[in-house]
Length: 407
Figure: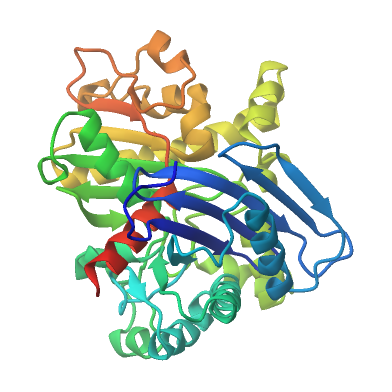
């Protein structure tokens, strides 16, 4: 899959978490994946690296202590080298980094400089769980290949086009501005990719299409995309706002927090943990795996059934809200783990919205496929689609376009 073009065309995509690194190596000459992998439990004795070469060879798994991100990327480099894909390859054009929070400053992929790093660090207070890990991954990659362009692709970038009336919270303006309190949105690379692919599925240019994108995974978000431009999204200052998620509450009366502090005596950290890690589906029924929830429903479990109904009710509210925001909708696109695989979720989310032109064909909805596809009947005024997301390809595409442009 190596390009005959002498220009370097490979991009390594890194998604660095607090104790993990996900990676993919792609050749942008034909958008082919060369290798994928994951390092998890970094800093523990039970660290694990799973590496899958896609150019031939077997999947490999290594276990044992990996002390830090530097050691993790060194191990990744060694595994890639075994397949002739090492980080020292002259065919490597750049390293693309997923960075969760870019604030308002970064609305596009950006070559990482010290000034860029300083701004990412300044955003740590609004992304304390994500940006520090992203910074660590960038610093480590820079130390391994200081000569190579490193590009930050921000989760928030796609949503910077939201108008002020959608991005502002109705609180004191001076306080909001002083502390950067506004709606930023997340999952931007997925929403950008899926909205474009949905337009392609309809045989139209993105500028001609209005799409409601539903990114439904353990984290979940919705977006309203008008002519390829995001005009609203469900996540806000943090990824906690919006839809019911695997472990996050989504939308909540802010006074619940005061009530828990005053009446239950809970600390800020305890409330943070409750809303981010012990709420959503897991808080409602003890499971955040939609397959398990559906199995329990089939067995008559009322708690699981209520959790599912709450999840669908919130999802349906956002479909209706974004229909109103857009005025005209060409497609609703389901994506991510639940959106792509849970046919009952798609069916239930659209049920009762026939007056809005939405419907799902039962047979088409039941088909399992990795390909983008329509699941609405031909008579439906609004297309309902399943569009598998590809955030790594989106990051690689944006990274490669930037370095090729010489920006």
